[in-house]
Figure 1 (cartoon, rainbow, N blue to C red):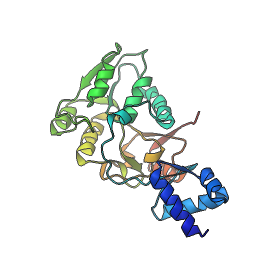
Figure 2: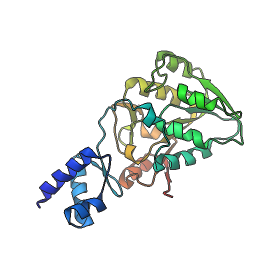
Figure 3: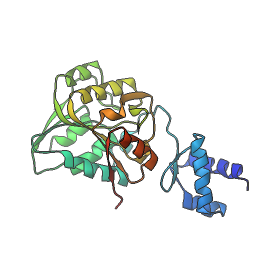
Figure 4: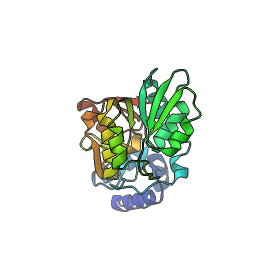
Length: 256
């Protein structure tokens, strides 16, 4: 089999799956893992896929359609859970924090500390509903027009958030790269998160490996505007290195 034929078959397999593994492909094609890794490297250079430590994932479009709430508000991946466990360590007694309505924010709720008192600002009805049962958390919800896919992010919400001051903002998006910074699918979403960042003393980005090196439609913040990025063990080393060179502290959640 010629390399071009093999790579075409790899691309076909990737289109039907969320992820492919070099080991599985080597067995399927009867070739070495090193050969598959070279294939994946060439394909990444041509913008056909995004490599991970164990294989590859599809390249994200610059805009993403809203995710069904059953998927968004689930138990999450092992990568997301590892990131969430690290993130909550930055919540201190008396803090005012921002938690949005993304899937990583929902997972964060499982690990919120119960041994200290703090305030949460959210723009998500789902997050607010979960928080109201916690006696140690005082919860405020942003006012504005409700949008299920991105929470409350309209002009009224943005103006409201600018009247506040926040200690720690847990921000996220569709992608995070050294070149394009933190980005998301819509200008409205990026404008709201940018307003959150403006009133926050500390800005922490939560981004699992499949967001690192990805650039979405609308920039929220430049990379150097963030204080900390928490990602996971499969984040591409080269991109993480570029982000660190821009002065952003990066913490890698470890695999179990």
